Length: 279
Image 1: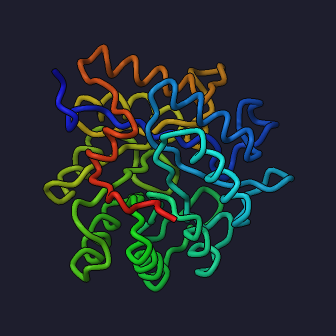
Image 2: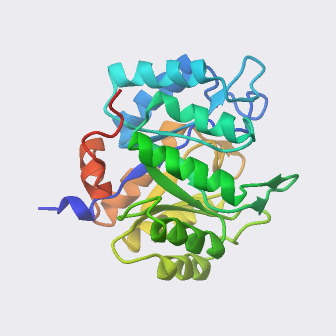
């Protein structure tokens, strides 16, 4: 029988901030579309939903009411672990990024440094990182440390040393984005060696790296994020769906001998507090 700790956690990031309907008709934009997509992904094996909000023009939004609509709808219909994005594309001000935490998800993203995106700098100054960490601690929200380069691992460890975050830490290794760490297996192994003992980690491969890095993460006992936020293609020239990406990685994992974690399994693996997400 498979031990719970050995199971694969699949996170799905269905929307993100960049793809629009003109890029792929399968991108969910409205709260209803995101909710229905999330339920399909849960049926295929996803246990964590990474949530971005969009406005009526499909642009990134920090509107708290949109986040609330998505979260409240899914809390009624799903067992998924809900993870709010605190990324800066929807609003870079400290107040904007902290305000989203008011929906009280079980998890939220916490990027522990700055990085150059293809057309702009993604700036996360120390006071912002600390402010987000303090608020997550106050609200008992588990942070997922978004790691775009090696230095960000050590920034996360400094937060732990200052008791702003607690063990076991959870990391998301974002690889293959122009301006960030390249999507080679050697770099993924190096990042994993930098993580503290007892921590958990997921890999988010950007573009064509999504499947390749996901397969290696399965073999390395890590976890995998898929979704149209990171890659809109199933293979070259063929558009993907979010649920299709979940289905594929779940099938490959089972073929390689790793069962898929249910949301309840994932809560145990990540050691989410029973009070997390309570309103």
